[in-house]
Length: 620
Image 1 (cartoon, helix red, strand yellow):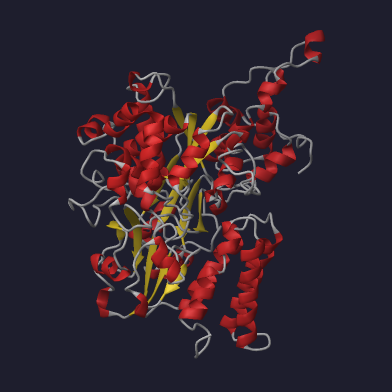
Image 2 (spheres, rainbow, N blue to C red; image 1 turned 60 degrees about the horizontal axis):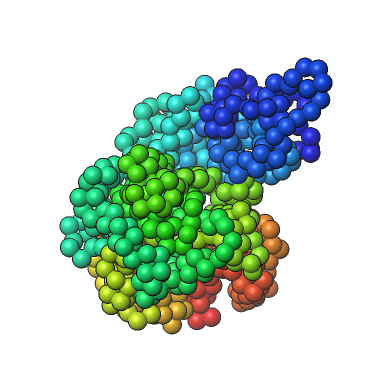
């Protein structure tokens, strides 16, 4: 890809129409409109305003992907003209994201999950049958209208095995399909109608102790009136009574910490942004939960979307944010639609806009859709992605509270953290802090999947044991023995069957040498080939490394290679030497990687070697 537009590559009428819908018609020749004749055609106005629209690059790429099924050279040229982006730059962004295709691809694509939870429920066997009945990954149907691709975790682990159908066209369709079998996938590839979006009751439905999940499944998620009848917007009204300082005080007193994995004190972050004199302030809701085994935020967004909108508005009021973004993973079509509908309805009813609830407070929010990049769950990579760049993490400092989105002070919290604040404000900070433990207050959403009788999203107070959670989920089915539990996802750590009495708190997990992370509790029974699960984890990190820093870019590859040699029985210098190499690689990545991806890429692998004695007969 050159710095110049690709010659003889023009956008089709369909591509131009898709971009007009996403970006609006070109306002001038500078933005790809008609060039005027005569002297007026030798000048162009609006270059600064066109370049200021760079943040629309991701929506523009999605417009082509959804309408055409791939991003052609002519379509990319047209985007570059419209947004005044160098072609090499736009190409670099488009190739960064796994859900974008820059080579011709059929309009109908089935993405089949091959990650850990789906493997527990037969995805490998399903893929074998799919290959036998249709052809290998990427093979076209006889009429060239469809194909299938392997996919990392689709966030449907409680309904495994899972797939996602994407159909490009004038009326594009995306829909999760879970659980699926080979016959269903073959029918979809033959042009069959997809089943309704997956749904089902929460395992704890009706439990009066639920706080974050109390409306999920019992209140119509598309009804604002239903939401308000069950306590909706009472917290925001209370926030207006308290004022920004009062809200900040309650959040600080609650001792609420982030639920995305970093566990940073929410009150400290909010106060830091609120005190910044630089304007504007931005709010980003991190809904890019791409950690394998994670789906709790999906449950909230699909089942209680107005709570997410209210929580964002409350956070914006407390921290002085004028604009908000929900950055949602591209594999969540149902959650995205639920939030889009909730935002539109809240805006129509005066709960967003220039005068929220008649209180003179202005705030609005929009959705930005990710495109298949795990790294964009990192808080500064989200900023880069929203701004229309490759989703590569920034060096810190400066921190987001000082220099965040568009270079301005920014609050970034994940969905679960934000929704917790509603109860903090509606009650009080001290009363919230009474739930759980001194160092881990409130309740925690856990994503329980794998070999359990009742997988799903569970809400428990901090301090209960892992054994208690497994009992809630019905234990391992079929009388089979428990082999291990992966805590925190691919970036987490394994616990053995003799460690089930560990308390589920941030401090308790740290003491046990593990992590709660994003709330993943992935149960593996005795039938699982654990070394191959480690290979899958290593392959995941190799694929998802953004490649910006050498320790992660090279270390994730070398880790996978070492595991492959161990699996094949071709260890260089013996098993002990290969295990020592994996340990050295892990230490290097922890010490020198820019972001958390590289710093945790070996955590699960090393914990399995150390705790579960994988690859050796004696403790390491």
